[in-house]
Image (cartoon, rainbow, N blue to C red; front, side, top):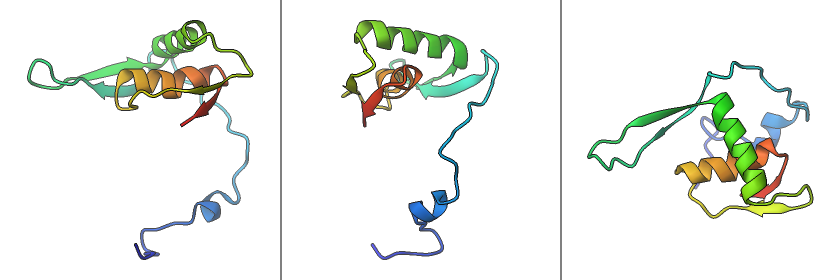
Length: 103
């Protein structure tokens, strides 16, 4: 595919001047985290809103306990990230525990 300077960007040019530190953004516990659409078992998919606090606490705790995570582990989850298990254990649970993940 030929490079199109109107839409293509070089990753290294974009991040070149950025800090390596990423300060957290403080938010309320009930702020929206994401909307995940159900598979539509009733004939019509429905959007389910997940909020920050309950979901993050749940995925952080279950990731640590269910997968017996330790700080020197490298973690990989085979779930599809488009499904709730993928969201939970590819992204949020490992990140909340500071885990090294293979994506």
